[in-house]
Image 1 (cartoon, helix red, strand yellow):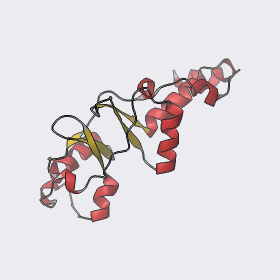
Image 2 (tube, one colour):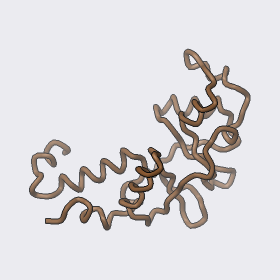
Image 3 (cartoon, rainbow, N blue to C red):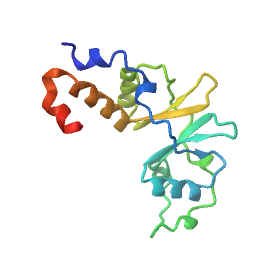
Length: 155
């Protein structure tokens, strides 16, 4: 029976990524981006330009680096700045046909929790999160017959 890396060797990023992408635009206000992060309870989002091309990533860590304190979800108290002023550029991206294992290695080496997935033109088509990766790996592991108890817990 193949080991997990062997089972995942043929899995593509497209097989694991989230396609309903929550994102912000580079011209959005920082207050708007903070509301999006809070509303969806996420720690980061891809940033697109007016053409839908991924131009960066905005994470809570990016915001914290600049340390602007808000209380009671008072996002209007945020500085008058655009997402472009705070985002990490360039965004580390992968294509949908990128190997899931290679994407996971990038995430580990770069200490990132999400990779925007872009098409050949740079247009955002998905996001691979660390949870997407783990879920795909666990479900592939659990699908083997030797791990039927684990598979039963997951279904």
